[in-house]
Image 1 (cartoon, one colour):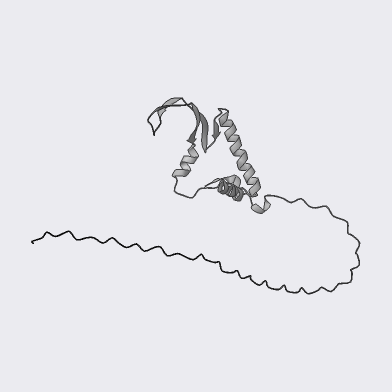
Image 2: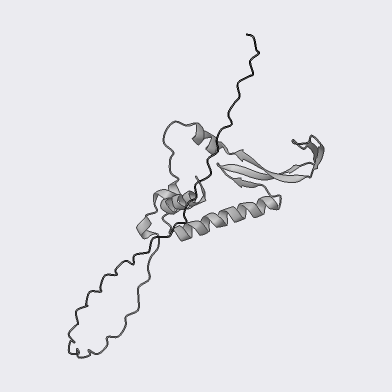
Length: 174
């Protein structure tokens, strides 16, 4: 599942517009990224725990030349699956929807406020109808014929004759 598919799935399940679902997914990703970057573990109960992991500087080898290379210290991310996620992955039955998603209906997701009543305008007398002219069909464009391109005369290449092989000289007396 890619990002667009995730937004579409959130939109369908939560009864949100795609725009609102995209904002929600962006907000979740931003919140998780900023917390992990600040070295705070993110624990989503039943789903997973995400935390930053430090990788120490080390020496490696350039695979093309075999020369030693210094690799700088970096940060990685650790993902530990939660108990509910492990249970759901290993179960054979259908995945149960969360109770918070069972009630939402797509049509009731966004209520439209009622508009204010606009005072009625006075009726304006109708104008006399003007006859409409029929459109004259446009003439078809005649395709322009192009003159054939002149070809330069082709000169025949001089014919080369194959050299005649001389038979080996015969000895006299044979």
